[in-house]
Image (cartoon, rainbow, N blue to C red; front, side, top):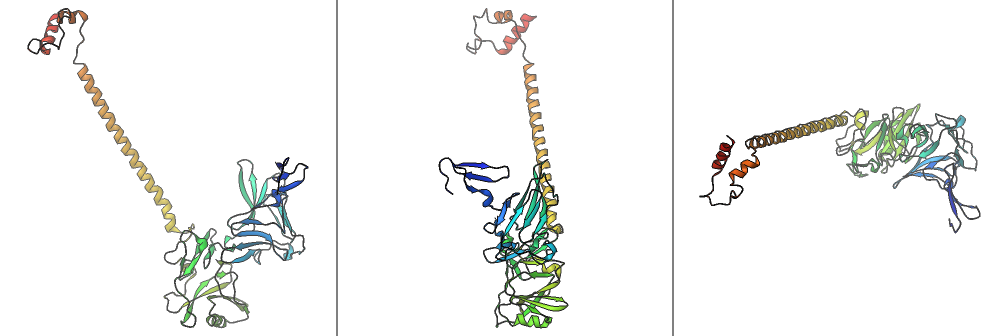
Length: 404
């Protein structure tokens, strides 16, 4: 874009920022350069995409609208998939237009037959479609009374379906709060950042060591399968992984006939009660790891941490202890301040009392009395030699005698 003399920029009522030259020709507009948000009437096309962190919403080569995770180590599409039934009659209409738009009623429509609506569908409400940093696509509606935005639709209900959430080898679980954990024998790479995932505490030495498998029920790692084997027994699936050096786990589902998925990499791990299969993790036979239950499989290895959940009692305990300790310290501070101010007030009262007592010991004298005591002011008290001047006792006595 090159704007010369006479160019103007205007923010339209639609939210579109438009730059025009002196003849009125549009040089650039924000609606054709979206970042992570679409406003009503703003179009997503084959040449544009929404981007937020490592996540993107775009039209793929098959003309389908997709969400993709494009991280530093891997890239994978995670929406839509077979778990979603938002497409009309389960059939996607393919065409080359590749166009999606949010309308002013809260409907989001795409040329691949995607049709969704905000829960408050209708005119008169300001809305936006945003790809959030957590990788989920959401419609937000504005509450005009307080200026807050409320989620009125989201593409993914259970966040563990979003790829890249817990990093390499990490397992996501939705309880309904998201929790990340490491498989048995793994530890977090960075205790402050789950996106960096987990690393094994053992090493694979193919052909030099015996291996066994650790069972992790209702768990899977999406993508990166070394193969797909149908109508196969569990023993056959296990032997395939044992005989393949690059296989580090396998997923087995017994849905009528056995289905085997040997795994070469462990990305996009998730655990869900709805998942019908089990993951079997390949580990050296010499390790002390044993086949684990569902709960222990999701417990992080020593040195790692889990994201807190409502059922995580030890972590919630800190939320009660900390306010209690803080309140006790605050009470001690208040009592100490009160004691200090009380002592200071007592000292001040004592000083004032002493001053009043001393002040009350003095008596005021009249001008005539002082004149007589000083010989009509010819004698300057305090300047004579001590032997010649009267003592204070004599002066006071003289004044009292005069008074009588």
